[in-house]
Image 1 (spheres, one colour):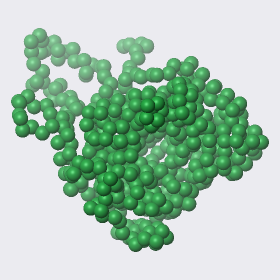
Image 2 (spheres, rainbow, N blue to C red; image 1 turned 45 degrees about the vertical axis):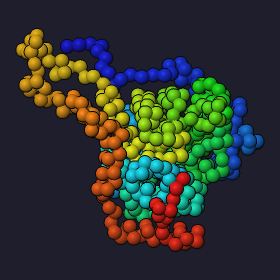
Image 3 (tube, helix red, strand yellow; image 1 turned 180 degrees about the vertical axis):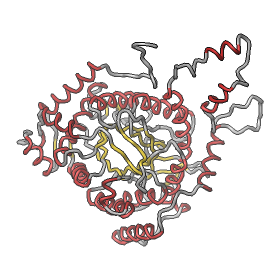
Image 4 (cartoon, rainbow, N blue to C red; image 1 turned 180 degrees about the horizontal axis):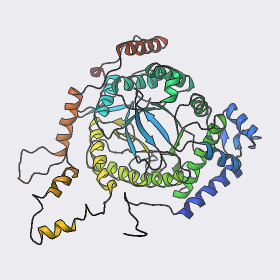
Length: 492
């Protein structure tokens, strides 16, 4: 019998105190009311004006605190995503933990067979989607529309279609424009069996980006308003850089990001209260030597973790990212991935994307997706914490074995040893072997094995035919035959 006993089921981690979070919140409200936000979307301005915001200057729309508080009340605190078959896949809320996803559709592909980079093409999207489908810690996929072997007008739609054909897992998309979003909703409805079913059990998630500092562009707002209308989950994330598009301090960056997120959240909730929104920012510094946005910086990990704490103050699901500035899958990539994955897991960032990114988010490596899967698996051991009870502290057994004894043959050991983490990419053999493969070789071989053998659950043939017919229409619209470039034509 115990009283006032505190049990930590997981490790405890904080960057910001409660007082710091409140200070950032109130400074954000002050910025929205005093400084204002630029809106380039007429519908958004009308919604804000009718609700009481000062819209006399569209370049400085000023939002009163009560509209922010109202939006925070109606924004869902839990969002459930489904498989393409309508089965629950992910629950996003502050108590459900982190869910990591791979990325497809960027400019370059680090080929596991040649170990050289080349332009990414459609068959690589198929491969990455199949690979991700096979990995338990890749729980969803994010598509980017920057690959260059197809016209930009159709890359976003083609990427999404080929991911859907090769995985059952939820997919979130970077989308070219609002007309593309409409078409995506239409063919995702074809997969789901109708728009009503897609609304009820969404496997498709949109994404939009405010422009730092403090600009809500027409395209992003129109996409967000359409998502609100259709009940499509929507990620709203900005990318402020300390010293460039945000003040050169962590706290200054956080209030810029928060103001951009909340100002768009207000419009979305005015359009349709209860519309599902996942909030976040890829906050970072600007490297003053190169002027780049360094994707492997330690600052980015700290800023995302801190923003997670701020957005959890509002009980909103949070978006995060993992990336690397390395050009190969080696020590730099592994260190940057381990650092970022651990920080976001400890912070509880729910919806973390971009596993597989290299080279400042310009290249994707299927090998790095598998390495990321392994790192996440290791960090899950940390996140389990330490259970303290009579079963885990078996005093009677310790008395029975006594000093100098062995627990190897005990039933207690039999009950628990299967929970030990099992390495699949790292050596643990004692003997020295000059012929032993290193981690990189094991990683490469496992990647090629999965790409050669793994087959995802197929969609029904009639659905596939309908989707390919839709895709053929996209190609016809841009004056192309319905065919994809071949690997041997491409190089960097």
